[in-house]
Length: 274
Ligand SMILES: Nc1ncnc2c1ncn2[C@@H]1O[C@H](COP(=O)(O)OP(=O)(O)OP(=O)(O)O)[C@@H](O)[C@H]1O
Ligand SMILES: [Mg+2]
Image (tube, rainbow, N blue to C red; front, top):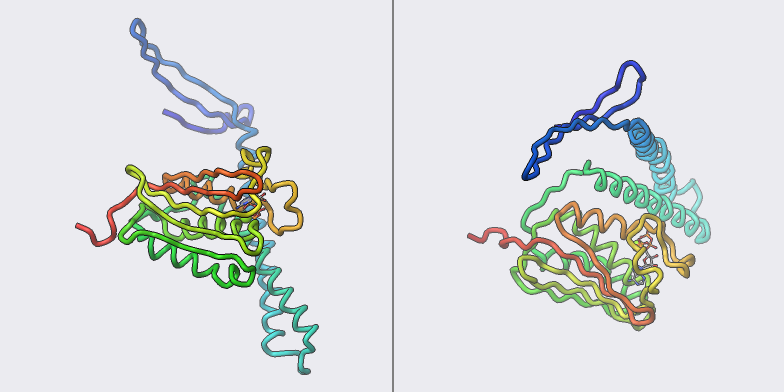
């Protein structure tokens, strides 16, 4: 039994836990009283910061985005010169990127705090994986990479389709970002015991042994990646999303030989199956 509360005499936040310890020769009850004031204060500050990002940052950003979109579509009374149009489009793109980064940050926090609802059900992997891969085809084509997707029919996982789609999009986005022109990015899926595994393999630059154990950490980016955009949050989000669905994400890589990301999820009967 656990309960939390403020001790009126000192104003400190306390957590009180009652525990029963049973040994062969003895059974005893303990009451553990912890002062959790500093954790509670840190939690409040994190919640305030989230609130500020979600509203005080996002609202003006969306207003700037809306204004730029309006100028682009209606013009300023004069036809827009190509340079001006390019500037406005750059502004719109960057507003969207910043909004997406704020979204990833907030969702990672919510997932790690268990505060994001996870709607898990049977997900048809063939449809979902092909859908995500198709979104990346234009980027792959423009960058001169080959993108393949091979998923057996009627393979289903127990997952939240939106969370899985976003986790995969992050990993696929990375695979394309870190694979030079002429490279290959291959997505496949297969049953493994009671689970299903989805693999995203590329033959790009790979990951150094120093970076490999750290890439899922918040804000961690490989040292030679300054020229790539990003915050180092994509994989942190992926891991939090996979764990929230009862799965896991792992990586194997060798520098210069590409990387293989494996997403494991509990398998499920295909939707509509008896
Ligand atoms: N397929 C890959 N090949 C090589 N390195 C990778 C690959 N995927 C991830 N990494 C390394 O892991 C780091 C962390 O990835 P993560 O997705 O978290 O951040 P990011 O892509 O740098 O930024 P963000 O996802 O926030 O836009 C990357 O900066 C890169 O060093
Ligand atoms: Mg990324």
